[in-house]
Image 1 (spheres, helix red, strand yellow):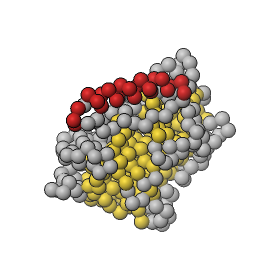
Image 2 (spheres, rainbow, N blue to C red):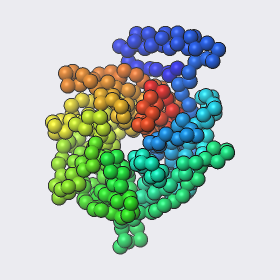
Image 3 (cartoon, one colour):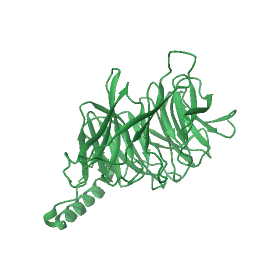
Length: 369
């Protein structure tokens, strides 16, 4: 069972949950308890990660993870789970690996689930790259990966402005947006592998971009401390919906796909996650504390409008219930997991919403929630 550690007000509740789990495990009989955690150990620090959105016949889980090595040569690994094993430390294995220049700032699988659509994986770093991953595996469970394109919108210089992040449009998978330290966001047509438009989005570096539910609206955050909202139908205008109190840089933006009125962001070296309501601009509708270290990642539940997970340098991943935030402050998480190192990244699987992945040190862990 998960190693829970939450504020004291929750201890009785967790004690009851632990007793329930113990009873369930005892009732499982000779098969033993259902495993709740799977761990993959990489030969490098794990940073970028992404769950495949497709169900894969040969593997219950399918993720991509990127190395963080401070040199040119880095790699991306495709991780599968052996369907015939429930060993917590040996069930996950490397099904494919390919070289990548510099560490990936982000990985993301295509949301296109149409029959016959290619299974594309996008990566950002110095450029945006598209890779196709074979759906079939060989007898050893291995996949093939082919580089499809390197997308570069800077044709006039031999230098590039590194890309900090991107988001794939779920409503129209031909659209992908990237953001850069050069203050711009670029909207790409994945089919033609060409830019549809580029805009100066912020006054300083742009650190993240996220599409809302639907095709046209996206938001970005950056070093100028603002959250800005854009509409692809009228890009000459943008709306500043929030600015951090001291204009501290905002690092990540996550849009609630179940209730697109809500966004989550956090500041550089901050222990709090800020929840925004686009109907009430300029003020935070909630601030989630609970962490004792700087927040590094946040993910909304893909199947619930009021649950969100945060992860931080304090080695904790906290799950919060925001259903009451309009009435009273959200002061405590409902669940927490203690990892064995500072958590760099967190992803909540949209295809299997009972599972969350975290990355810390050289570990990828998959947790049942």
